[in-house]
Length: 281
Image 1 (cartoon, rainbow, N blue to C red):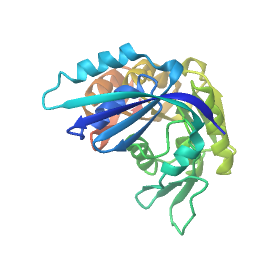
Image 2 (image 1 turned 60 degrees about the vertical axis):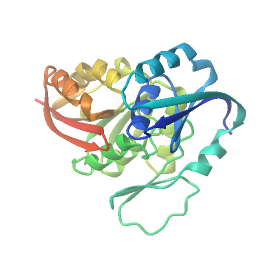
Image 3 (image 1 turned 135 degrees about the vertical axis):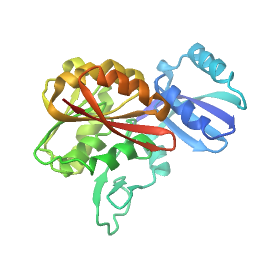
Image 4 (image 1 turned 180 degrees about the vertical axis):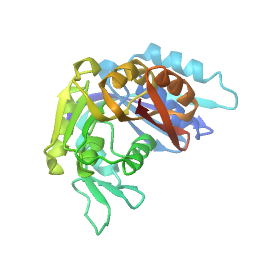
């Protein structure tokens, strides 16, 4: 069981949409790990040692300058508890149209014609609930993964790596900078009878290519820092899928990618979040 001390920050937003999504994006860059929406409230959780109150105040001061937004917050310290039990009580099945269902191990498996992935997220990102994971999974069904070599950068739970194998990839490297995510990805791969996934600890400088397909669902700043490496690691005619950012950030990423020998293919959007596909030329 996973026990640790956490800080819970409760935000009350008016209006709730779209500022809940904006706030989640910013907080994710500040090491907040999980979120719960109870409109008009957003609950955000971070491990106590990583919490920086001054950084939070600076962020809220910046956001509060927006017109037509009212935001109040309360900081709570949460003592050790069984976080696995907490997420079990909140985890709902995820469906990517008729193509994919993402279940927790304790969910009842019902008749479904598409792919099924079992994910035990613990403290890792990537259950499919977030729009960016949905967009990545949806796009992956449009790509030929058969016998391809794939990199899942910022793998989290490993859901994208697992889907890549189920779609035919025969060699998948999953990298994350958080040790618990590396372990979580490896565990989830075994739960789904996936044996072609190697889950490793490290950032982009630890990755050895080349790859036919690269998947990266991370925040915009990290993606910008990685794009030249993605281009270097891709085979000619290789495919790069990026998500983890708002549609409003797309032009900046497209311009940066195209300056690194990557050709923009198309964009998909879900409620303000975006997914970009590029090809190596």
